[in-house]
Image (cartoon, rainbow, N blue to C red; front, side, top):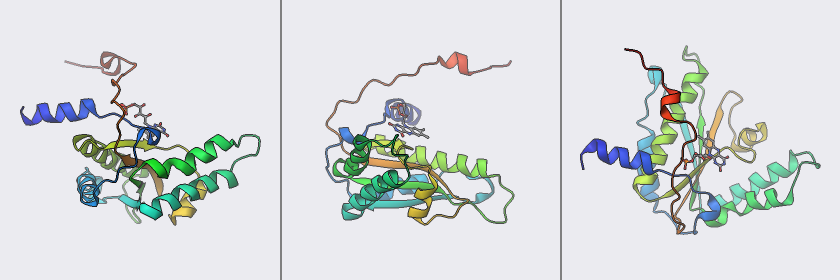
Length: 194
Ligand SMILES: Cc1cc2nc3c(=O)[nH]c(=O)nc-3n(C[C@H](O)[C@H](O)[C@H](O)COP(=O)(O)O)c2cc1C
């Protein structure tokens, strides 16, 4: 297989796996480090390298999930609050190995628009997902729960102008990888001029 075919296979076969489908097996920290190194090679306009990561494992991972559930409880209208969601957020730590919070650290005194720094961090995030796929690590890029709520920024000690790009749940899974699907034909997403 040439380099392109290898890349093609990894990109094409990468799938999202929910924490509920992970089995609690621990990922070696050296592999997490490899994934973060891949993220660090994302393209970056103006070389601001705005990607930042907060990694949780072991006790800290459980504490994060309980804290996340508590944020949900404290910041949700009682009519909208459900115990099922509260417990789901709490229990995510039981089956995942590591959680990586990916956020955009807004560069000060720089002309690069925030949109472009968000784009760069999104590219860094995809690098992690592709690396995980190549290592048979199950992964979910989640913006569920309180990911985009201001209370999460406070919880993580982020500045107002920083942006949470995703909570990455990583682990191993025994569930068969489902077939990927796309709803819109590529032809309908492309305007090709010649
Ligand atoms: C910015 C972003 C946020 C996402 N948030 C969630 C989420 O909160 N919960 C979830 O189950 N999946 C989430 N996903 C994953 C998508 O559901 C998933 O990528 C989509 O279903 C396509 O499946 P695939 O990744 O297996 O190709 C998110 C993906 C992106 C790019």
